[in-house]
Image 1 (tube, rainbow, N blue to C red):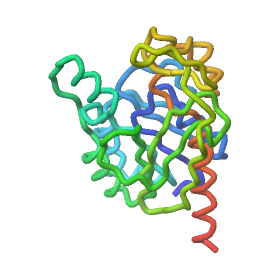
Image 2 (cartoon, rainbow, N blue to C red):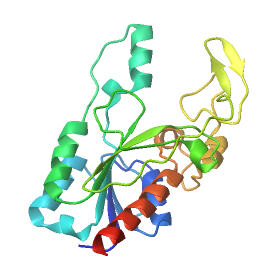
Image 3 (cartoon, rainbow, N blue to C red):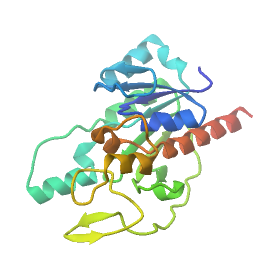
Image 4 (cartoon, rainbow, N blue to C red):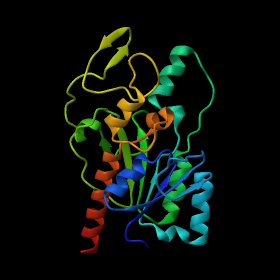
Length: 230
């Protein structure tokens, strides 16, 4: 087993991966979409198929930790609210359960990340941009498999997210790093607010995890592992 290598599944632009790098871990990614700006070694393909292959061949043992951000749009708060308000139907992928099943089969410690909403994960750790002095709130929940760490306290927000909501314009210390219009953040604003410099693609930025989150998780994982070894 590697002493410090992370497999990042559903890697998108690599926001999570960059945080693990800052924590001192090496990173490999996997995403079904073409991600030419991804800053680490990268396999393009279906994450579940790739993980199945790594388990079958034993190559999964190169890794100390697996991080996964599986799609769960059907239960995402923004998706549910928008669809309800617009009367839209349609189906959305929910890959959390099959991803967890394979992660359990690896025998490795893992992290499953999801945004606030109704996704069926344990909220072992919840992180917010205010914890790290960022210009976004971007609440994210993390289920920790085969390892644990104390959850940090959630500080009080300093104000509103800048922009229009329900017909009211508000100013505040945070930018809205999603969607378009209504006072949403520009690409440079999103890059600055989240600490992401290697991509200027709006779609990638709106989906990204601020690296500060996984830098914290990576450091906590390394500490927890060292305590077990001692």
